[in-house]
Image 1 (tube, one colour):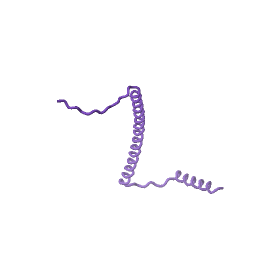
Image 2 (cartoon, one colour):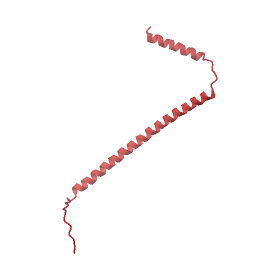
Image 3 (cartoon, helix red, strand yellow):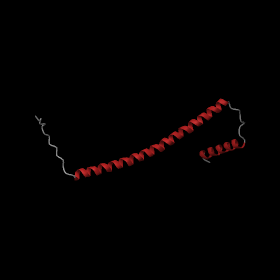
Image 4 (cartoon, one colour):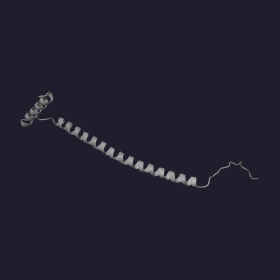
Length: 99
């Protein structure tokens, strides 16, 4: 019998003994109950915030990607239109004052 198997058997026997004959329940202070309940609420709220933030970040990221793709398409369309049109040449001239 290996050491791992022996430890598993001992743990199963101990767990069975606890389940068959649980320890006597003792009274708990109201403050301890409130602390346990408060910690549980805090953990649930933290998990909810993380889940909501993750979901909204995913939506925001997908919206950003679609907006970026649309912006690139618009930029490409405008650049093709500019390249297809006539060339614009700007010649600086001196200002002439009228009498």
